[in-house]
Length: 539
Image (cartoon, rainbow, N blue to C red; front, side, top):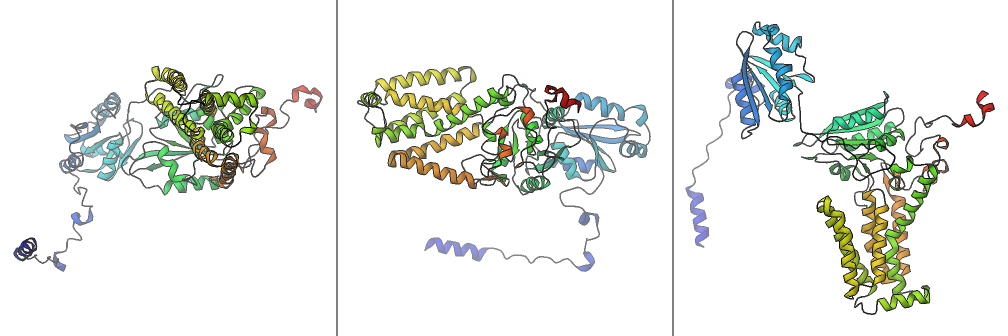
């Protein structure tokens, strides 16, 4: 009760609110400069006021440089930039040296005319700014902004020199005979790598800015004469709907633009190889390049596209086809081998040959767990070992993964925690998962392996069959930007099957895939080996 009495006393002793003063019609400041200008920007063209506004906005930013000097007939000037993001040598030679030279030593009006009208400064990427908000944004993006006293216009010089990594070999998509160039974090360098491979005017790139805080450049790349206009519009529409404060990498955009974000299967293809992107563009697909990341996004994609590797196309066709078949076989091994072991040893031992059954039974004699629990423990251990090998330094990562698997696997068998057969099963499963060329797809099958193991432990082979039926139904319904995920197998397109389960010779793949390209289907003339028949070549 005392608490409520104290509250009522405070309310009673509170001074009454003063009524809000309504502006009279005669005292309205609607026509004053202060009312016409935004409240957050200075309306006066004086250099002192604009400098104060910039220092207020960039308070506690010790890396911002305010360089004041006079030019012309003692006209005060201010050059603002962020230290480390602007090439100071280029700034000195291209901007300051020219402004302070003989051609600019004239009246203030000539100084502004030379700068804004005649553009006598030879610096690249210069543009005129009219608002302080634009000037602030250019400074934050790595440009140098020049302000003159009593001149509302400002000049921005794009002299950014952010530290960047040199072009190096790809880490996750290595090849034996192909090129050894990979994307880097610089979006301009990445575009240059693509321009070097696609020297045509049909190569188009459209830029968007995403991220209210990071202002990240996102560039959509496509071939105008091959890609469907509907696909270009759809990608642009999905990207335009993204409202987020930061975009630190291409993976930020994936969950916003993919068709089914709840599917375990990736619906966008990731790559760090420019040659893979160039080949995808020539098939009518679109690539999204994000500033600050070396990984590009390719859309649309299918399950079979992510089972292909760049190495397939740099080897002879029979070698590429053989390697591709090995991938498909071990794809099912990585997904189903532990589940088959659980189902057969638990529910269907009669399907195992007698000698093998005796060997497995004798090895499991001292194991206190069921086959399902044993497989679950070993699979979780292998996943933890794989993650540890990824996080520790590269110099010891491979050694830790190999030695750790050997030592702990042997110790588990000797301690009776797992059987020798289970160690072999888990090892084969892990090796099979490494054969899948795309990491995201391999991760999807690694995740699906556990629910299939649960069904196998509860229902045997029937549980595995039910799991495969559910996965197949999901894959047939899944789409990537409107393209069926199992194209061109479901629905069947026989002409596009030349580059699915086998890699046909180059001279037989005359047309582009119809499910990705609706324009300019012919990629080469038919009968590319005319030289074998001189009579036909003469005709």
